[in-house]
Length: 353
Image 1 (tube, rainbow, N blue to C red):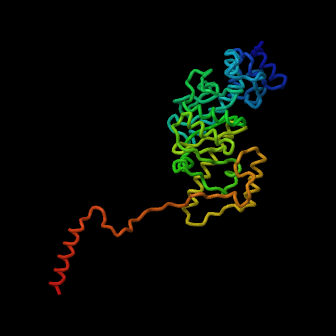
Image 2 (cartoon, one colour):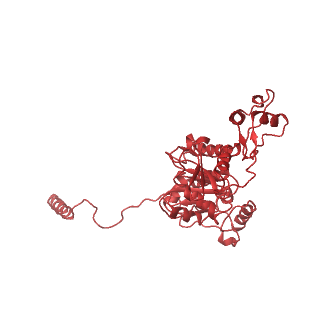
Image 3 (cartoon, rainbow, N blue to C red):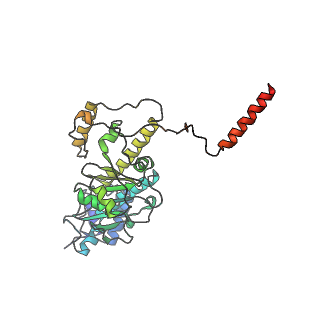
């Protein structure tokens, strides 16, 4: 039988200094839930005891479900989890990342979506048709790995299948993030991964591949991206945007968006300076990949020889313009008229002589 948590239980947890530790499958009374939300917002222990200050409640401090949940779990258990303080904190994390995406102009309109794995085959995700700049915890949805919505009042994102296929293909994927950062998406539009071996932060945290274009939200798009997750944690979707995954949390998936966008912007600007671009040596890149491997990040170059590690591909820095050097007549001019003008001019010059 699930434990019932009241206001008095929460106050006692704070009073004894044990912290607010509530099982994910517990039943929280409405007044207790309001108290938890006040604590999360203000961090004021005075709300509960009238004396000191308590730390905000976060998912790191709350306990995940004691019983592993799946799409086959009873509806009551899924509802209890979805409305638990632990799940609420995960929803708040998604909202925070959504607000950051919007403030950085990585999304426009209602674009972008995120998901966090919370069970064997279930995930919390963002809704469709909601700006990431105005996300609220109450907007979130709970879905199974087939895309069926299990909880939530708003409809789940239309691109959830891609996130779920990534999680099914890559068991380590805890969180996924998709958006449209302009500079990185520009590389996606031309179907090319950024050149490598220029900045260490990018090389450590991102491993970038390019997936060919398919209709957003389609199973085909999801499969193409999912098949790349063994080697890449940051995937450019041709003519669409970027999707990342993390084996730690949703914030790390978001960080990859900041890193790849800053990197793409930096190398575009560097290519316009008219100077040769410096890159890492083989041994220097090998050291970076050793760090990357120690952090548990994927990269297809791990184990390669030093001479194989850096690649600029077909990327060419700077902008180019094409000038018409053809000897063909310029479009819009009549060759016969030009010849007549020349003949008349020659006659006038002859008379003047």
